[in-house]
Length: 139
Image 1: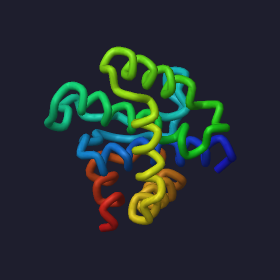
Image 2: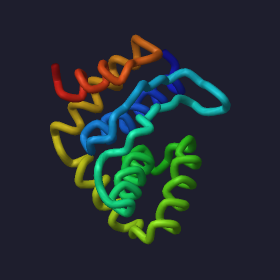
Image 3: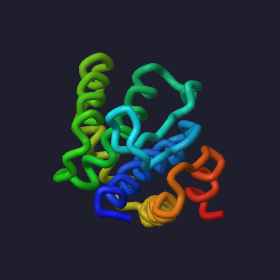
Image 4: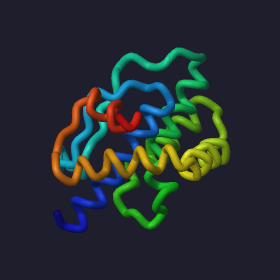
């Protein structure tokens, strides 16, 4: 796998594992380039329970995770744009989103789950939601 594919695998693993840890179901994740995107994590249309502001915070954390992990990654601009919209519309604080991402990235269980999903994306171009949950949970 080339460096671009490896970066995409990590980027999408961060989205998918963040979603899983935060209770937002993942339908699938791919590292394939589709529609101008370097890869994609497909979140379930059914949002986790909570107030709209809490749901916006959860979505912002999922979206911002790769940018917090690697601020030099040039592929995060669409993620950052999405977070900008969520922050403006919901009133959540960007500093809160950033802090929550840093907290999750410091968690050894989260980092291990990201590595498992990332490694699997190195060998498979598409993972189902069930595969993401199994890997994120260390099963």
